[in-house]
Structures are given as structure tokens and as C-alpha cells.
Image 1 (cartoon, helix red, strand yellow):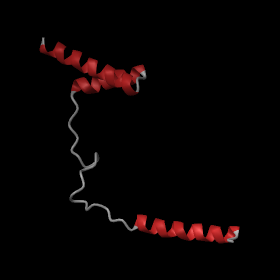
Image 2 (cartoon, one colour; image 1 turned 180 degrees about the horizontal axis):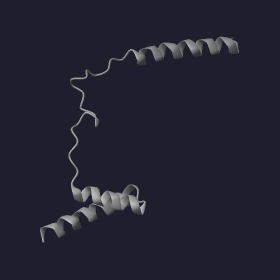
Image 3 (cartoon, helix red, strand yellow; image 1 turned 135 degrees about the vertical axis):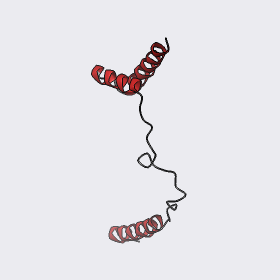
Length: 83
């Protein structure tokens, strides 16, 4: 019959063995990895987009509400610019 300390030692040893294999996994080479957001060239934002973002900030909008507001705002600004 195993004592509690023996069981703890066996569990610790098994954990170390499993963690070692997890750390040994190779990562994908940087050349084949997709570019991160920081590496991608950012598109210049239009004047409408910047203006609508400022309006959303003033209203304190976040999340889905902000996205919906900006979408409608930009659409209205572009339609007004065409007329």
C-alpha cells in the first residue's frame, strides 16, 4: 500500500514528464507563420472613419453598439459626399 507522500512523489514525477514533452514541441518557422497585426501594413483610415470614431468616443460607445454606430455613420458620410 502506498503512502500519501509516495503518491505525491509519483504524481509530481508524472507531471514533470508530461510537461517536458509539452515544452519540447517545436513551433512553426517564422517564415511560414501568418503576419501578425503589428506586422501587417495598416490601411490609412479615411476622414469619415476618423470622424465617426471620434463621435463614438464622445458618446462612450463600445462593442457591438460602437461597431453599428460607426458603420451607419460612415455609410451616411459617404452618401452625403456623393451628392
